[in-house]
Image (cartoon, rainbow, N blue to C red):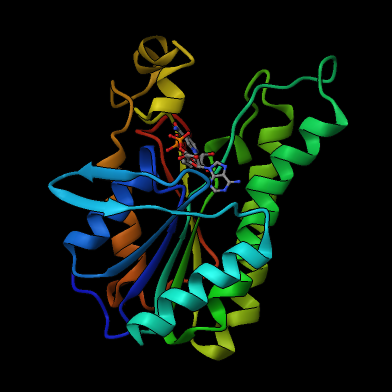
Length: 238
Ligand SMILES: NC(=O)c1ccc[n+]([C@@H]2O[C@H](COP(=O)([O-])OP(=O)(O)OC[C@H]3O[C@@H](n4cnc5c(N)ncnc54)[C@H](O)[C@@H]3O)[C@@H](O)[C@H]2O)c1
């Protein structure tokens, strides 16, 4: 996949899982990656080494400062944004708290808005934004009361932002993964059981999800905006 000539790619949640795989894939494609995470760390993935810049996506000032500093240093506009940072603590009507509600919606929804609003100031026509939703936006998952609602919000934000940014030539799409082999997910201890019920017989790998960020950010997807692609091995078919 070839990077377009506006070649900074902003990737959030880049210290782990699909964010890490995406940052590595985009760097291999030739993008100048600005890897953001609430954790500052050095990562090696798929032969790519990169350092994450410590940014909390719930803090608009931190996000704006990091993107502005990177663009000033590199003189590159932003060509691609991958909003991948997310949290998925379980919750039910019985055990949810106001604090947990705010945490989940702040990271998963406000975080997407903060990064998008900060990045579009540095984007030109041809740029693209890819948000991470989840199959839980479309089908119920027991014990994911707040998470499912937050990811449904991401699907709708993707549509609204696509409409709003279309006149500027900026496309906005989303990916809704099913079960993916990431550290956060492995911690649930439920992946083997999940694989048994997935039509393709396995959970997804971070790299194969990352590849779709490259595709959605490329001119090959230049006529697609406002869509959410489900990548679940047939677990959820819409
Ligand atoms: N793993 C799955 O199977 C799966 C399925 C569907 C959707 N998703 C979504 O895909 C995305 C990535 O999932 P993953 O499993 O790779 O995640 P992960 O838990 O492995 O990594 C998430 C990263 O986001 C970062 N992060 C969390 N809060 C942040 C904040 N406030 N500011 C900046 N960074 C922050 C974490 O530090 C971490 O590095 C998430 O949005 C998740 O909801 C995951």
